[in-house]
Length: 216
Length: 161
Image (cartoon, rainbow over all chains, first blue to last red; front, side):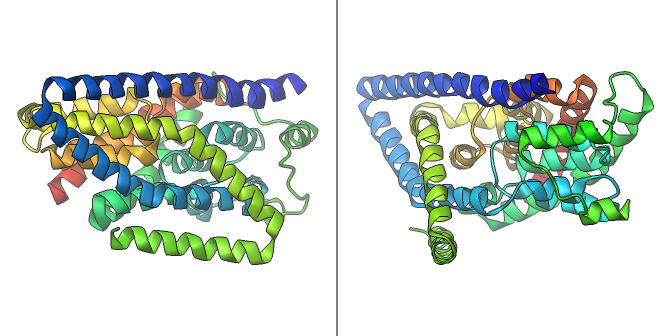
């Protein structure tokens, strides 16, 4: 299991991040050089570009620090164990909504969610719940919604949020049906002891007698 | 500063105060996480600011209208969905980018497709998702997400477009 742990947290946490930061800098350098060069070549258009950049920068600077702090607060105050506790085996239809709510809590980047989701599957959680949890983690986050509200307005934000939830639920159920159709490539549920070992290695060991456990 | 920005800031200040009262150390840790995340996001923020300048200043609105404009229909939808699927732009800074494109004449449908695919489908994360959850799960989830994103975008375009 220690091999699994290394692959899960070590590789996932380091490589993509390093790759991404490089791309960030490349994109920044390229766009900055292009903006500067074109502005020198076409001064009147350049002025319009600079004004637009400055306006958007100001608007982002007004909200981004607050959203970053909000994410930090959630990361510190919301215990990731609740996900394992509530989405384990035996959570029914209510589990679908719970999966969305738990996924939407801004507690970390997407690559943290994958080992968590794998754990849930191995623990025997519903595939639909795990799909919903991951999708919600990816696209329904409180800070994201606030940013959307700020820039695209409440109509756009609310409609997209409502549609996302409405479409994701049947999609997750369909994914579950398709996932179970063929046995090849399926993740076999782990034995009790194995689950405990993975939980311990991820530092997300759920209390033995959580509600999800007793229901099942 | 817009009213939305003021409300957001007030809300966060309220949460921060509450957190400070309850636990000083935890709040400190939260601020450290926030600071590190800000440092990580900073190059992307500045890049998007420059890209927005390029879009508003140098891309002829006609190009945007014909490629992803309100009347571009299926083509615009697919272009936006494809870009959203393959690009990796942190969601937080994708919204200002989408706003600038909307201002320049992009269609609601295309922008909804862009944002939704951007957040829902991460090709950059696909290898990790496969490693952790298996090919079957990863392909099913991402494939169906694409379908979901297109449905969401079409309805958004019909309602708000």
